[in-house]
Image (cartoon, rainbow, N blue to C red; front, side, top):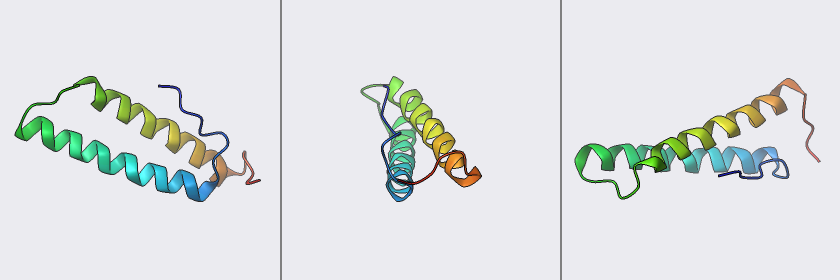
Length: 67
């Protein structure tokens, strides 16, 4: 589950966040409409989104700098 977001640029982080949000929405829809193969995928995806939001916010505050 530990993904390395440390070496990604700000634009890559934004793209990854958008992809994870789409994936999370798809998982939620599948849960409502039919059966999920891995119900823990919802939790894992939500946690990845939170970790990405933290790193992105650090860039916005100036704690992290783009390389």
